Image (cartoon, rainbow, N blue to C red):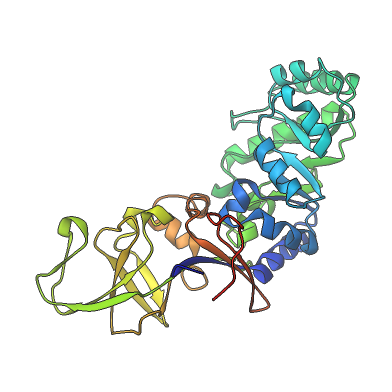
Amino acid sequence: MYREAYVKIDIDAFKYNIKNIIEKSKKKIIAIIKADAYGCGAKYLFNAAVEAGASMFGVSSLEEAIKLREDGCNSDILILGHTGSENLDLIKQYDFILTSVSKDWVNEFSKFDGNGIKVHIKVDTGMNRIGLKTLEEVNESIKLLNDSNYKVDGIYTHFACADEDFNKKTKSQYEMFKNIVEKSNYDFKWIHCSNSDASLSIEDNLCNSVRIGLSLYGVNAYYKDLKPVVSLLCKIVNIKTLHEGETVSYGATYVCNENDIIATVPLGYADGLRRNYSGRRVFIEGASGQIVGRVCMDQTMIKLDKIMPLKTEVEIFGTHIPLEEVAEDLDTVAHEILTSLSDRLTRIYIEEGKYLTDMNPRLKKGEINQN
């Protein structure tokens, strides 16, 4: 590793979370590893997911699906977003499962021989993003697709407010979906509506599978028996004592009131550490530090309570500072924080407490040796 800023990914915790969710939900797991497994490296996690019991993977696009297949994934892969009919040969070649994003999509694809390509019917129950709106559209689409030699293999919807408890909106969406599934009178192999939060908070006797994304990494609004998987870490590369009246970083926004101990770490907003991290706590050697001054593109300054050795590790979030806490402080969601971690950061994979491998997306060979 060439830079003292990195993302650590705990494979054991990742597997634990999948096994835990399977046991809790009593359903098959569709592991959502879109956006390169939320920035954690799908290539390095799909095998662990299979070992832990994941039955299928979900990605956002044909591009992501091809990358996952070419990285060696032999499991079923569901493309959650739009795919064009001009790519039918590729879809057949790689054996992907498609999502019917609209009635227009179904009409277009039904012009071609499906050659046994599997499709999951997406039902729009109130997210108003993609999907079929009515029972009539669902039944017509099933017939058109089957008549054109596609295999309608599943049906699903997506909740808009699952992270806000089983509220009126979520209940309404669930009942609408249940009504469509039951009245379609079709034998779907896969029925799924619950994402991470809903899967562990909603009593559901309709579905046989759940889609798990963020909870793979230990985050769930209701269920806390999960382990944190991802840590954003860096090391101190400079340390100094500043006197009263001296300022720190651009704009001189932080003014020292006394003799402040200020450490510099090689991590900045080009790595995904947003500028509004300023003022947040960090974890260092059993104690807390505070980010002071404006976060720079490549470097950030931290106020310490005492002088610490160079190369002391600093946790921005991870096992001591929950990702959920950071998301709440920054008025965002944990998904955004994870997927914002840039490809400048080496990903280090740990299993059974030992270094397994690492990956830096910017290096030509992808993998590098740990120093």
